[in-house]
Amino acid sequence: MKIISLNLNGIRSATNKGVLSWLKTQSADIVCLQELKAQAEDMTAEMLSPNGYIGHFHYAEKKGYSGVGIYSKTKPDAVIIGLGSSNQDVADIDSEGRYIECQFGNLSVVSLYLPSGSSGEERQAFKFSVMARFMLHMQALIKSGREVVVCGDWNIAHKEVDLKNYQGNKKNSGFLPEERAWLSTLFDQVGWVDVYRTLHPETTDECYTWWSNRGQAWAKNVGWRIDYQIATPATAAKASEASIYKAQRFSDHAPLIIHYAN
Image (cartoon, rainbow, N blue to C red; front, side):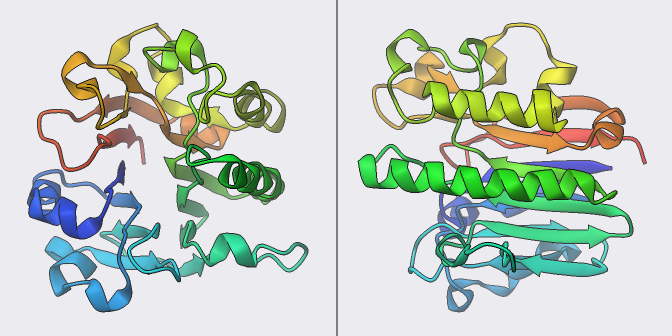
C-alpha cells in the first residue's frame, strides 16, 4: 500500500504546476491532500477524480482557504467529514475544513491540516486550542481498535533535526516548546508512531518537507519537516520505505511518500 501526503497550497495552483499529471505516474493507493484553497464549485472533474481516483473533500467555509481531501483507488466503506465530535465543541475547527477520514475495512486514513500560528497571537491561541481538542481525538482513535494512518501538515517541527535553523526558531510558531512537547506526548505517551522518522532515524537535511518562499529557502535547503504520516504501531511496523519527492515543485511543500506492506 502506497500513501502520499501533500499540502498543495491551492489545488488549482498545484494542478497548473502538474501535480495531477505526476500523480498518474505514482500508482499510489491513497493520496491525502491539504490546503485545497477551493470550494466545491471551483473543482474541475479532473480535480475531483483524477485518473480513476475517487475523491472526497472537506472544504472550508471561507473561500480560498484551507480544506483537505483524500483520493483513493478503492471506494471507502465510510467517509467522515470533519471531527464533528458529540462530546466537545469542534464547530470552529470543522468550519475551516481541517479533517477528513476514509475507512477501508479496519483501516482508517486521515488527511489533516493543523492550523499555523505564525500570523499572530490570536491564531497561535487557536492552534493551541485545536491541539488540545485534537489530542482527545487521537487518544480515542488509538483506543478504537482500528488501524489508522493520519497524514498531513501538522505545522510543527518535532526536534532540532527537523528544521535547518532551529536556533533561530525556538520562539517561533511551529517550533515552540509547547508544540514540540505536544508531539512528544502523542508519540511517547499516547502511542502513535512517526513513520518517516522510524524509517530514517538519522540526522539529515533530506527530511524537510516545507520551505518558506522567502530568502531563497528552497535554493539553500533551509527547510522544515512539518508534514508527517503518523500511524498506529501495527501499521507503522509494516512501513518499508519513505521518501520525499523533490524533483518537481507543485507547492511550497514536497510530497511525503510511504510504502506499507498489505
